[in-house]
Length: 207
Image (cartoon, rainbow, N blue to C red; front, side, top):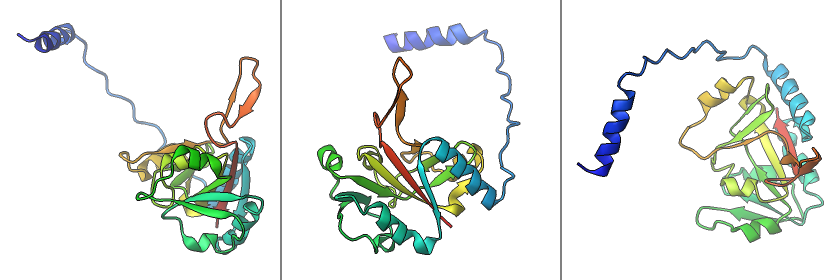
């Protein structure tokens, strides 16, 4: 008998007289009750509380708002699938594209001033924005290394509660869940930002 089989037999023996597993209760909420306007209001409230900068703009005004946010930047990175029309009004900063055939390394990402991405879905109740690696969101690393993250979120992608968001996500895709700028506290409870992600989070909600 192999050592592996011996271990498996011992595990099976130890579990032989274990009690039956009780059914897991599934009575939690699966859908929210807020309408679209209320979901936006709730999400904005949560994000502002997390110290994010939030702008609710018409989709047609997004390029101008994005240009204003990037006015002081020297360079910015975008994923290869981000809609070019959103960047049409940005003049001045150098645009760097992260693409599967030309992925940027950490020093290159650290050298840019900001990253602009889309988003897969957001949960208004928790103020959480989720990225899933889609072409308009890119690799996880591009939203974690630059010091500033500008996230473009369609209002149609805002749901109220977590189960609604989970139902929209593909579980095999890499995910990044964001609830405000990166922040932590030291032993004296002093808030420190930018330790394990962007120090600044700007969210554009496109209506």
